[in-house]
Amino acid sequence: MLYALLGDLHSNIEDTKTVLAHIQQTAEEARIIGLGDLYECTISKKKAQKLSGLPLQKAAIVEHEFEKLLTFPSIRGNQEERITQVTGIHRFQALPETMEIDGAMLMHGHQFKWSVSWQPTFPSFQKSLLFFGHSHESGLYHQQKKLPIRIRYGQPITLQNKQYGVNVGSVVDHKEWCLYDSKARTITFMRALPVK
Image (cartoon, rainbow, N blue to C red; front, side):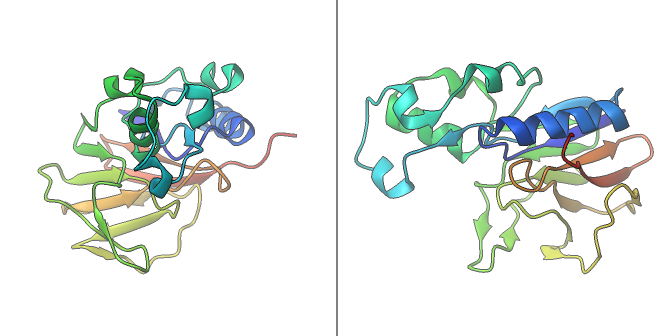
């Protein structure tokens, strides 16, 4: 099965439209799944510790035009969790923290430990692949290390029978997503060009 995995949209309407159009053009039959941080929380982590009961519009960028684009299932990210924390609104708690698909686990990435240079330490997982986001940097990982490969957008990478972590990159700013073919066991890092 084909999956179009995207994360870190951060309420960006134009970048999200561009990526969804790219998926439609290049992988129309793929099942789209979000990896969290769909929304942008406007309250910093530090301020969030002291605030509660805020209206949703004061805590996040939530626009009707953006929400119409969210026609796919998603897990939640740290932005959705912080919005819940400062508003008390439970709508994002319905989003699962993780999800399993064919041969893979999906997780946002804020649950990992991250070094000061933004290198993740993965939790143990049973599936052979772990797709994640959070750092806004595409990459392929094996045994807790980022593999020194040059990402060539649009070119499939055939994975060996090992465990890998796959950072799908970010929709916001980079217009990145990842195409996963569970049958062929390939991943393809993708980058959408702006729609003209």
